[in-house]
Length: 487
Image 1: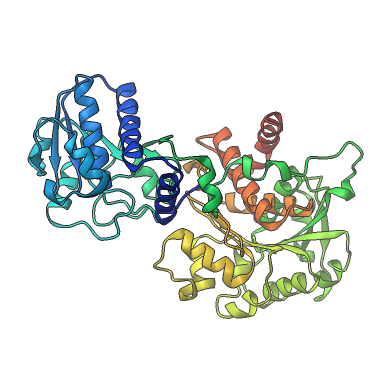
Image 2: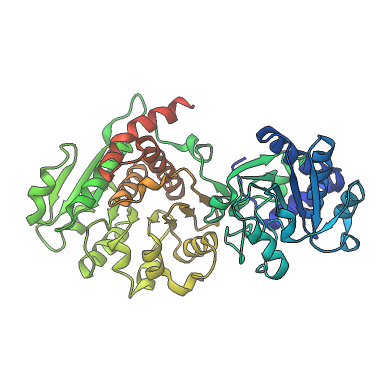
């Protein structure tokens, strides 16, 4: 159940299910029953306010109220709007509700009842105002169970449309939506339960979703585990361009590339920095670049098949030249940090040269400097990263607590396993090194990026509070061992 369905795709799933013979009222009844089941598993019966909206989300609320009442719960139901305005399946559900229907108003929340939020689902596209917003704001501090999404949360972007409650539990149906995993939606949803309501799995064939949660099931079968008859040269030779000042970045990345499985890793560095790099990890080769064109000549070696430029490289003409040399040599490339910022004033010069063998790993600031308004910076994160991948022809990894990876062909994943402890200096360099190590072993750009982001998050989770970037590469063997044991 890793697929993420947009609001439009979820509507399509409902339509396909109905066309396949599942009645609409049956889907609504199953949705309400799923919410009640989740509520009863977590709380004992106590006063509950069910807030229903004017659409199908409100119809779910009517089913929930009736089933809770039948289970012995004290229930009050309030409707935003009029009963006569309800249509379709929601009207059918309202007819089956045996109790009074109160007018929705913040007063119904007095006495601190459990709140079932069935006001608006994921399809809400306008900013909440007036009475609807007042009711949502009145939920603050109360225990809220959201039906589909917390009201006011945009299902595709995870953005708040004016106001949205903090839910303790969100019950959604068939598949999650991007808004459940993108921030701030992921935080506001609380615990998320995905309920089976009878939509056949085969409807996905008619939707062909392009978005998913980043889980090993997407790429595990492509992971380059060492072969019994393999050797280090078969596992690729990665190159990291090291800078003269911030030498830690390249060292972190190079060790991460080795831990990710690259057979050999070379740091190419200025001669004056050679002693610093040479005193680092004994498993890393260090090659001082004596002449201006030495990096380009180094890449003429066909065995050196993957290159990382950016971490600690320095900004300016020399870094731009190194990037162009790597692209001219047609190497798989990871471009990060200074490699991206060096092209901030000449973005098209870089973007026009990239292809799907290249992986860009910007944070938000670097992303904005490189892509700017060309990808609609006001758009949601998924849309922006997809647009950036399409514009550049490269795989784009927009880092953050909800890292998004997108391929030029439209595929995208949202990563959900990274702990906040990773927000410390150098962890991005480690991530770039993991991507590099996987590219060196022959993974394609999108799968290498997805794999690296997940491994990076798992290493962070394994280490927990207090981690620093130096710890991450050392945690990878344990993560990889567990991954391999999963089959």
